[in-house]
Amino acid sequence: MHPQLETIFDEAENRYLKPEELSLLGEYVDSLPQRLEAYRSLRDRELKIMQSVADQLQLELPQANIEMLERSIKNALLMLRYCAMGMLLNDEAFVQERLLGWLSQTIQVYDTRSIDAVLYRLLNQRLKQALNPRHLALLGSMLLLAQNALQQPAIADTRH
Amino acid sequence: MISVADLLTNNRIPSNYFATDAYVRGDLELGLLENRQGDRLLAVPETLIQGIYAGLDKETGQASRLVLFNCGRWWGKNFYVRFCEQLTDYYSISPANMPMVDFLQALQQCWITHGWGKIELDQTYQHRGFLVIKIWNSPFAKLAPQGKQPSCFLETGILSAFFSQLTGRELHCVQTTCESLGSDCNRFVIGLTKRLEPAETLVTNLDHEAIMRQISS
Image (cartoon, rainbow over all chains, first blue to last red; front, side, top):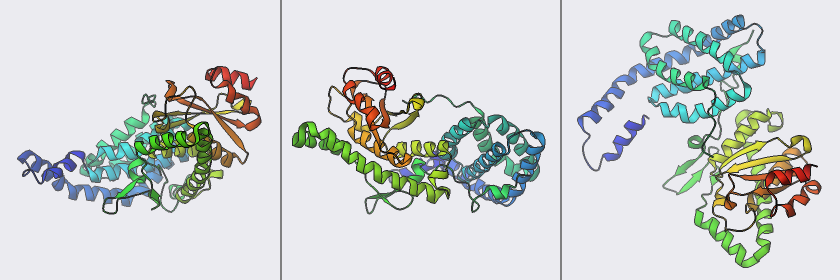
């Protein structure tokens, strides 16, 4: 769940929620039916969307190594699934902590970033056609976050 | 043409099995920690680690290094079996058939999630038959009594057993730098016992690079 929402539940014993906290909760609850719809809609179209992206990708990059393409597609599926869940929970941290750190390392090692760039363009185009605009808007912020993070050259880990 | 449906294994794409928040689960009522397979996890408080060091030192003195090393061997052997089991279950592929990169990435995440620090493999001396492992933020180094030589004997044992199992050859491990002595990280050299043995006596006098030059020559 969104971290801001999670923290407001800790205050039950002290006080009633402030109007702005209630409205935050209200916004999330009001958006839930849309989120669920968007989630279902993506779930049901996932394979079709990704298959058409995969076909396009092969047409655009006929020289690319099949194994690299497959890896790139698998990673994109993973990204899509995590973003869908992140969208449902309205929690960017979920996508960041569970997926992005790990996946950006994989992408760096296998060096699929240039294929990914083409794939993301095709995927975003395809999603625009397949999903209704309200659903896309909900999913969009998560996808943008993930794609931006995964296109960055991995930052050297300074936590040593 | 690539079939996307065929890329899925039972409709899933295995990813980060050892992701911290997914891997460690707690039951507050029973006071238990479990991993995502339902196996018990043990929380080891800092005081206990300090106590083990102090107790061993009192009871066995100099020999405590060997005791810790042998405990580490035992731990590493079982750890390797569990680690491989979990990978096999999750990725539906045996670790032997897994790309090395994926295997190492899983090991790194596993290390972090268990709170043992950050582990990295350095293959600079691989062509000379040595593998160097670097570990940052090791709790075993942080809590070790101050001494004149590297103190992570437990990890030395774990790593030698783990990599012996992995490669199917009996390998030894010697620590050359230690966070407890002010180094940036703990460096462990893994190799055949016969070739690595000279390093044991060099540790107190030479730095990592010098030791590596000596044993590689």
